[in-house]
Image 1 (tube, rainbow, N blue to C red):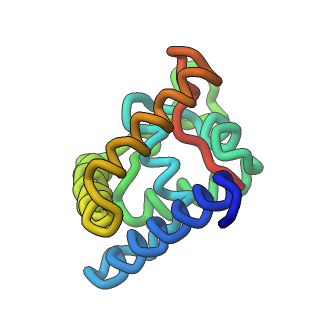
Image 2 (image 1 turned 180 degrees about the horizontal axis):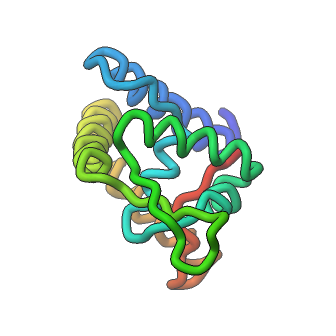
Length: 149
């Protein structure tokens, strides 16, 4: 059997692939995992492209490309920064917030399918164990979801 980190990575990839396959089946824009990380980052705040790039661990140019795609598709809005004329704040639009709700429901569906495959009790044990490990490593101040590339 593979070591736990490899199993976690393979499971994450399998769930992500299923998630994006379903997005493709319903005809949404060609959203990629990087877009999902931006949605989550902007869920409770607005941020600049530089902030988004730092969060994603990519260049400002790469972050700007992602923001432009999301803006073109209507998921985010760019607004002038009040003190820095070169910067813009990026916020989720109503369409972006609706997509997050949709994505949360889709992740819940995939989690239910996982529970059917491995058993609800097993999944509950895995979830509580992983949460306990994260508390052990980070304390109560969790760093939040960040890309693993």
